[in-house]
Image (cartoon, rainbow, N blue to C red; front, top):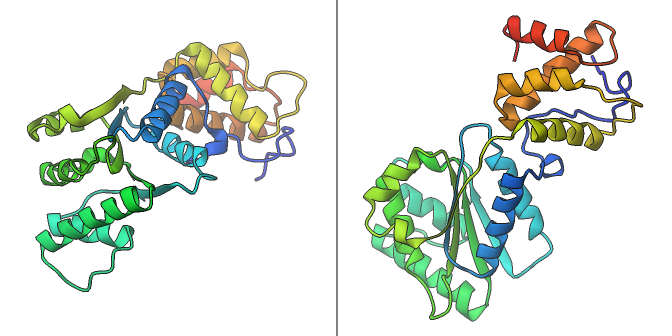
Length: 271
């Protein structure tokens, strides 16, 4: 059932897909985004963004890419799932991603080829190579050691690889086990969940982005309060609960999400 027209909407307002156009600039998210962009443009090396599941790390990553989309001096590569079984598999994947032509070779050969690539792009061609790694909590100690090695490649002024790792906080103890890895972090930032006011602003922002043109708020303040209390300000949980609220709104042929609708969905275990 499409509820868009019924509720004065043009498209889905509460999708959980990492769409940059629906990226809400909370104080925490906006600060992370700006500091990341500065770190990359200054070529400072390693940036680590930490946050629990559902805090919007992946959407932040996609929004960061949008900030550089018209700048040909920046070459971005992205790893969405770094769950490689061996060091060689990780090296092979990086070489393939960087478009390094190697028919075969040892682990040493691949490391040497990566070094040559970074110097060619970063020094000879004056390009900034950026590697984005999502789901960083899946990185093991051996992979972190390899990334530490890649961060060693630098000129007198800057790092040749800009590495951005987005992860849950459980990665921190693993990073501490890798010698000198923590010392290489130029930016470490923790994304916090939203507060109650930001939760309200997020809901309103997404509705406006979806074309909402109603004469009054689609969610009452009381409904928003319950949504915040249930989700604790986690953007993904907010989106899922709001989506269910709107579905119920259409099914019950009502026009506004009030607290009774939110409570009935929570009590029914639908989130």
